[in-house]
Length: 120
Image (cartoon, rainbow, N blue to C red; front, side, top):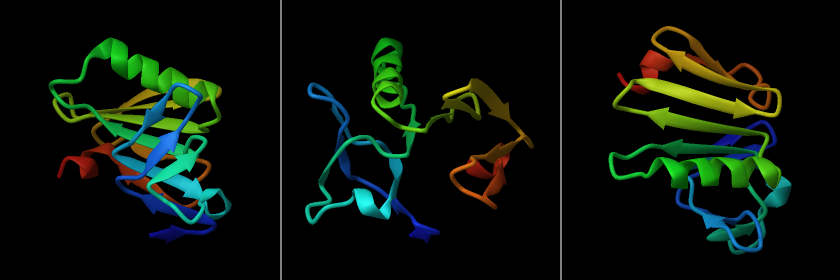
C-alpha cells in the first residue's frame, strides 16, 4: 500500500542495529529505504507497529521499543488486543489511546482512526 512517499509492509525484517533484527507486524517505510531484497532492510522502519501476543514477554517488548527508537524509528505503535488499547511512542511523548480516541501520526497526514476501529 502506498501512502504519499511511504510504503506499508508486512513480514519484512529490519536490521535495526548491529545486534537487533526484528520483523514488526506492520511497518511503514520511506520509498528510498527499500533495496532490491525487501526481506531484510537495513535500518529501522519509520513507523513500527507491534501487536502484543499473550506469549510476548514485557522485557522483550520494551527492548524492541527501545531499539527501534534509539536507532531511528520516528514512532512505535504497540497494539494490546486484550486491553483494546494502543500505546504510541514518539520522540516527544508516550500516549495510551483507547475507545474513540484517534490514532494519528504526523508521518501519516490525513490518517485518523479511532482505536475502536482496530478491534472491530
